[in-house]
Structures are given as C-alpha cells and as structure tokens.
Amino acid sequence: MSKIKSTQDLPSKGCLRKILGFPVRSLAFYHAALTHPSFRNENFRLTKGLEDFDRLEFLGDSILNEVICQKLYEKFPEADEGMLSKLRSILVSQKILSRIAQDMKLHGVLLLSKNLRQNFKDILKAKLLTDALEALFAAVYFDHGQSKAGAFILKLFKRYFDPKLLFRLDPNPKSTL
Image (cartoon, rainbow, N blue to C red; front, side):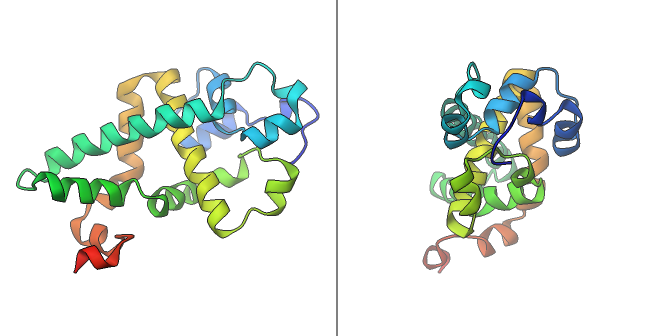
C-alpha cells in the first residue's frame, strides 16, 4: 500500500494471525511495527498516535539477540565465546532475517511511502524487511510477553540452528576458512 484512506487499510487481526500463527490481542504495536517512518511522514494524520517503528526495531533487535544467544548457549555446550559469537552473527544477519521476513510475506503488509514502495528492490528490500521483522518481535513482546516472543523467534529460526547450514550461510566466507 502506498496511500491509505482509513485505518481499515492497516493489517487486520485475522491477517496478522495468518502471518504470525497465533492470535493478536492488541493491534496498535503490530501496526506500528509494520508502518515504516516514510509512510508515517506521508500519512501523518492517519498514523498519528502510533508507537514508533524505530523504537520497536531497537527493542526487537535486543530481544532477538537474547533469544538467539540463549539457544546457542544451550545447543552448543562445547563452543567457546568466539564460536558462539560467530554463530550468533550469522543467525541475526540481514541475510537470514530478510529470508525469514520474505517467507512470512511481510512485504505484503509492510506500509511504505510511495517512493520506497516503487524502489522496493534488493538491498533496500532486505534492510526494510529486516527492520520490520525486528520491530515485529517487539510487538509480539508487548502483546504476549517475553515467553511468547521467545517461542515465536525460536520457531522462525528452528531450521537455521543446524551447524552445517549455519556455516554455509555465513555472510563472511573468509572466516569459515
């Protein structure tokens, strides 16, 4: 969407339930998580009062890191700090996060300005989807709490905890050598 005429054009609870896999209690944080600042600037009257996308992204990034670090710590008890850091950086990379966001079809509900929507390609697309996914983690946290947010993240990342797959996905192939 590039222009909305009313708040009815924002993703509904049913739409979000399909994407998330669980019911939404309060739409406000999800709408904020999926409303890029460029869209808010273009549609100020309609988005006035929404929580800030960037603040949610900031918190979602921290939530994601905590959940991933705990899982890696449990799953790889013999790994030292350096290896755990390397695995974490692979998992929380833009490459993995944008893949997950694409699999969730977040691009279909992400609200961007008309200009960004027209230029929604490659690197910009990956960055925007990654930011929205991190903001979405914070929205789940506020709507359902830490436990549900953690379980949601682990479900999305489940397939990526395979060590062989992780090293194939390493964004820095030189470090694998």
